Image (cartoon, rainbow, N blue to C red; front, side, top):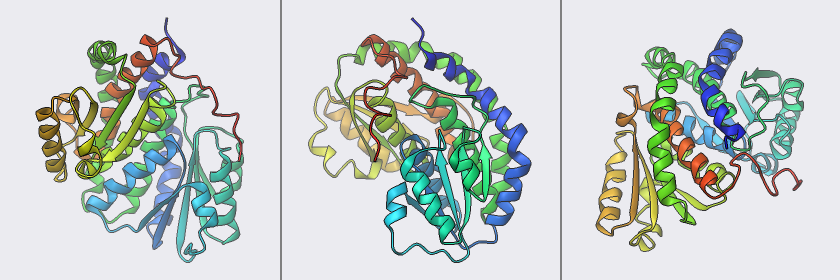
Length: 334
């Protein structure tokens, strides 16, 4: 049986291409405005929050752009928001996420320049922000948000790297043009191996997921919205450098631990943790960028998300779960 998420995985490259075609000129205008500002607030939740972690860590590795991340209500209740020469970028798959929308309305009241990135036309966020980017992922019911995740991440990278002082931003943006073609290749080539891995791991109930730099955002998505929401497995995301705090006392024989490695300078720590984990005979799974694509490692989440999607898709399937459905999300409003 193929669930909706199966087709969504294959449609990701098309969604990126259509978003670029429709929104690149507008994103150029937004980038120009942001380049003249002093501070960036990034606001989102769930998969959207994971994209914010990735772009923040990527930019902080190579630029001086001042970036702050908040969930919607953290932003809303924060008494120290700097609204002078500042932009708030608000991200949501639906454009109706309650806490993110509350944060957007507060930013508008404060007179900030506001930008929304969402996948739903005529949503409140798209209509109420001073600027908006509509990702072209078509309506996506699957809770894992494959197409919406990747198009949102692409939009954030495009806008903020172009607005930054990174001296190689033009080169990076050129590299980004390769992403749809590379994803098509990885989608086809990584399905079977991760289906087999998922079958081996289907009876596990707890997964840890480690990443450094931009890969922490992907580790967060993998744990929070893929394992827990999609496969209904307990999971915890951690920065690789935090392996030696807490998890080092729970990393035991047969404990499943996923490591994401893109050869960042900080991945020296990732590989130290992998070695320690292997020594304990934990069920160590390493997703290494070099095994999938030759691309600037700042862009690793765009590539590594694909084998992880296949792994989680089949992990759910082998347990009789639809990875795109939910039990409680959508019923809880606060």
